[in-house]
Image 1: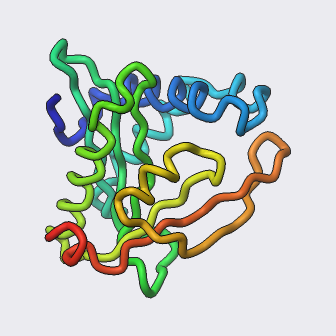
Image 2: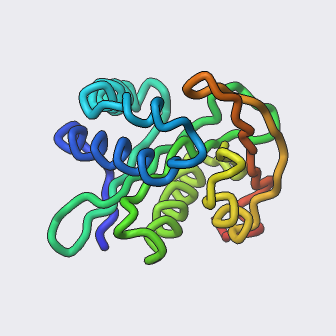
Amino acid sequence: MLLREATLKDVPVIARVHVDTWQTTYRGIVPDSYLAQLSYEKRERGWEEILRSAKDTQQFTYVAVDALGQIVGFANGGLERTGNPIYKGEINAIYILKTHQRHGIGYRLFMVLLKRLAQTDIHSMLVWVLADNSACRFYEALGGQKVYEKQIERGNTQLNEIAYGWMDTRVQFGY
């Protein structure tokens, strides 16, 4: 599995992975009507903007490419988006196609984001995860501590979202 920084040419595939992963991961958590209205085109516009403004927003995106040259997952992170005084970095997204989950790709993407944050002298971070998402166990296994909780709305449904935080990634991961 190759991990590399995403380019604008990757936008259509990142958008497909994003939508497809939402539709499999969040089925039964987010209303089906909300999942059904997700579109590749809308996500393409969003990802194009994210990649075009990456330097200004200090975000970075990596893709996971399988042996056949297909993008099967991606991760995005950077500066924490709200100016949190404790957690300076944030993982905004890690999504992997269902067929490629549970093969260590998420861990590798997590570590590349962690390393990239460390290169900018950021050693604390958080990630927001829907409380009913099985990814909670992934972040807990990586030592993430529940530090915040909030309600968000998706498809006219209130959902719990949990923030997992790492106070000092140098201690836990050596970065």
